Image 1 (cartoon, rainbow, N blue to C red):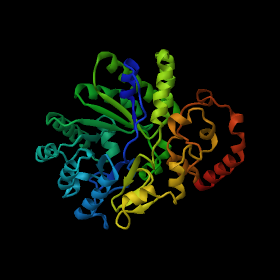
Image 2 (image 1 turned 120 degrees about the vertical axis):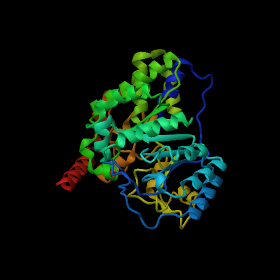
Image 3 (image 1 turned 180 degrees about the horizontal axis):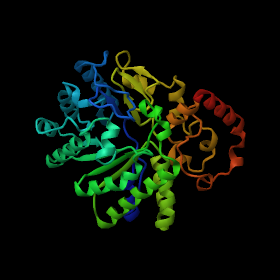
Length: 403
């Protein structure tokens, strides 16, 4: 996760002696249930409104939580499917809070109403994220359910009025990116605390809709909007949060923005973003799916590292006998193509590996969603000329696969 607001605040008021933060354990995004009342076009878990056999029961979940706590995991993001469809979601949530985890709830919001808002408030969630895919017509089309937008916005208002920190989660594609300015207006009108923009990743249903991913030019436009909105907030002394995820090139693009707008803080921000280090899948970000399979992050559902029913998460996570995990935890990572020679590799960490894997079958190839050009990255084509034969072979493989 790239915390735009944090770094924009530091542009205005730099830290005296900033230090690299080393979390005690990875953030765990936990898909407790695959069942969902919606069938969203970009769903990475390919959920449906049916029961999926083999999911962890309450006691199994509690046992995993004990291991996560002992391992130093600081954050649990409870997700799905739709996590509110689990009958024991409140028992799990209360226990997580009592154990001292930062607990987030990731929901589509349509099941939050006057009947359960008090129970949700009683849990004391540190954050509730509700997905919004555009204004009413667009959102309902993406969620494939009429009335979904109104229900989700109603949930946002209920959470806000109950004193719960609530945010909107938005995934831009070519079909809805143009509505981001309208969502920023809604954020203002509804006094929403946070906006999380998740770049489209190639996983699950999103993988089948790869052609609708935003082109690089549109990605830059989205980021410019977010940077300008956030900087205006900082200048006005407002405390709203703007964050992005699933494209760590955002850190490098922020450096380009700083160079143009606050050039005297460029060196400071470069140091801070190097301390951040970019992509941390397989290191500080992890995922447990509904069956207990462990993945490097939520978009690696086609790659299992182990199962918490058979081995403790703490053992699975530290096992580098798996080649992918060995590469994820390596510093630097064994990157190829443009990513190998990029001058900002220490900022973005090689970006999101799953896109390269889905496109080419090689997790270490250059990330196709990096939207900065060679000049901005301080490289020339000759720098990665040695990778050209492999690039041609990968391109041939992709063309054959597509046909």
